[in-house]
Amino acid sequence: MVVDVHAHTPQFRSTVPEGMRRRNPAWRPDRAVDSVYTWDEFMAAAAPADRTLVFPIKWYPGERVGSVNGPDQPGDAEDPNTETAAFVRAHPDRLIGFMSLHPHDPHALDELERCRTDLGLRGIKMGANYQSFDPLEARALAIYAAAERLGLPILFHIGTSPVRMAPVRYAHPLVVDEIAQRYPDLVIIMAHMGHPWTADTVVVARKHPHVFTDISGLFYRPFTQWEALVRAAEWNMLDKVLLASDFPITTVQETIDGLRAVNRITEGTGLPRVPEDRIEEIINRDPLPLLGLD
Image (cartoon, rainbow, N blue to C red; front, side):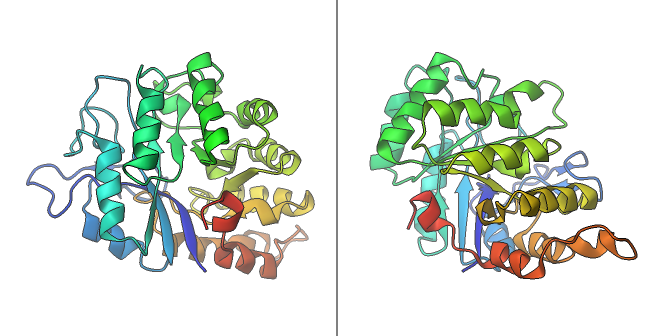
């Protein structure tokens, strides 16, 4: 089974209103990305995957939400979790929805319960750097504790970002080491293999049984992808690496093709290669039982 564990909720159900299309040139080095899109455009890009995990991002309380570009950008989602749930209900056999919470929202734990029970969302997406909260502050820890108790996996943005006001220290893999020590039964996915701190991501995922990492946003930086997966092979934790696209920044097919090309960088050298059979395992692995989502 092909499962994409990392994709962003579309901003519009049917058509993008005239003048609201956006292209972002900073997300990847090889081309600009259409960052505003519809349900149908999302599903077309997701076609190679049997299941896709989809989520919004909840900004600071009081800011209007509806876009992976950040607050006050095009989008029609005043309530991003409800919109995500509606999208998932439209494609129940293809999509698994995660909620987004902001620890500074005084009703965050109530929202968690609403999303879990009323909306049927099955995990949590958090990005402390983008959402501008300390991932080890008490309000964030309360969310992790509830997620652990309720069996909700958390997908963290881990790694750098081109967003100037996103504090990089909030998205370092070693933050997850501290969280996993405090909440040992909490299931965690570290996004992007923590690029550029891939070595730290590998050792954190290796030591914690319920911590995994995804490969979203790696293939278009070929050296980083190769280095990260070679490290994972050398530390014997490729079984904890999950397929992920980070749509709209990439598609799942681009990601699969880039993963299969990971060893091109070694041609004509004596550098180590990522085992081909392990690459296919990443592509075809069903991570849902590992994440408690089966």
